[in-house]
Length: 252
Image (cartoon, rainbow, N blue to C red; front, top):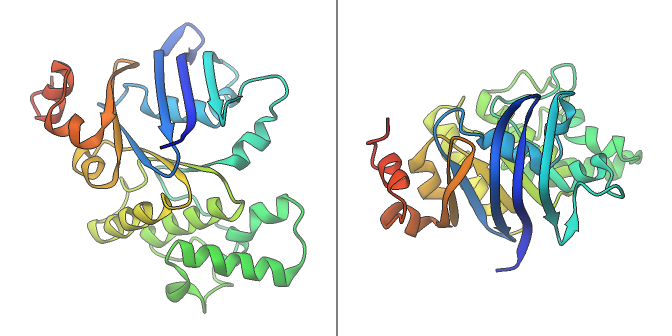
């Protein structure tokens, strides 16, 4: 598998607080990587560093290197906005734009990128709602508010919105934590389909979910990457005692 992103000796934090310490990890193209670990271990900070959202906080700092297709993402020539177009983000809580219609939610990023032709927009919106398995459910409700649909549909709408700007990498921060089991199953099926086209990185507190959806898994604890490898190996024959204790429920 080709390497899509590579993180080397990454440290990050806020002010005097260090959240990440010496993280080195690579993410393969067209694969799902799960990041697991207890609350507060730095999982969300890690993926926010991957698309330069971490630096939005005025107290945030970062050292180390993050490469995207061998390009230094934090280099002076790399525009943060262009990075975020290439690396899409789906958050823990569904966040459709409540004052926008379903159509406009998906079209918003395209319009920001200068697309104005309504026929082209309509084609792109339909295409990405189909990718998110929403067209059959919502195709006749395009002018309704994005906040009027169910939580699971809202999360898939946010995924469609992220896909519309044609990113290369999709980051998902606990994408199912606010959803019921049926909606969670749909998101998991969608993730399995997305890896055919995208590199997918998922933060999850749900170890069973990580085992189901991912090709690779990284276990984090206290800001460090304790173990990383193929998911089957991590869950069946972990090499680190901390990993084994966490996966077996003996942690703490």
